Image 1: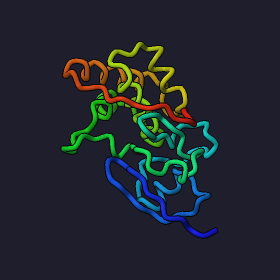
Image 2: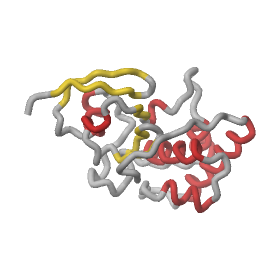
Image 3: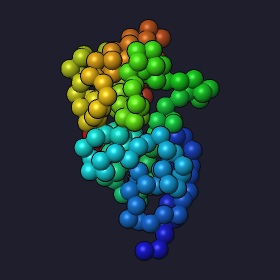
Image 4: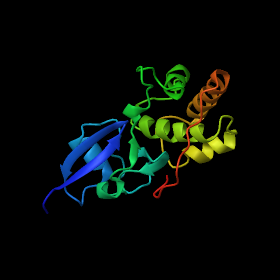
Length: 173
């Protein structure tokens, strides 16, 4: 199948790429745009390792054709850092709480957690569990991951960081 020119807004930058219209967003991000933080996991939408934000909502990039994401605002784990290359409070909390072991699932958890923290500044433990329920980790017991989200939420409330708006999207983990 011939390649098609596609335009994406990825991590705040306009990116053009020629890719097969049958490629998933995951394939385009990793193979064409060299954004390898988003991981290939199960490729069936069960593990959450490929989670990215599309128009502010978590999406399983292994289930979304790249052509469906054209002109959408896409944020990968590489785009979570602030403009001055300061890590997102959730990234810092993950490091401080030891919430990552092998790290393979970490990008999906970070992206899903950031999505939650943009919607609410004071999530309950149940809300955190629900927001992260589409992500699987085979190394941890999830406790440190949940604690990291709680710590980041506390710090974000203390610094009164603004909550950006988001729009609904399909293939939500």
